[in-house]
Length: 111
Image (cartoon, rainbow, N blue to C red):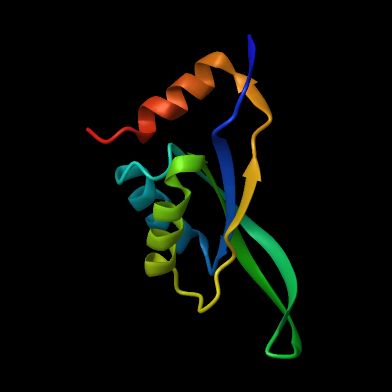
């Protein structure tokens, strides 16, 4: 059954490679800052950096979390990340399955 979500969020970030994304994702899940980290290796990014057009192969990391974990998640992600200015974009989740949203909230509770 589909349920409206007021607090679920998806955070997007890119990393230099899948190894960094895996380490970062595991740490954030272990620390209850994300319920799930999904790695999408091999994404190609084109962007402007220091007034130059750059291009690189990266790994996209999708982090499933809640609104109340965002500040702590951002702080911890910045401390783990190899980039000087890592991507940290937050997308609201309009709705999701009741069971998944319940699971997400359970995973974010500290033991």
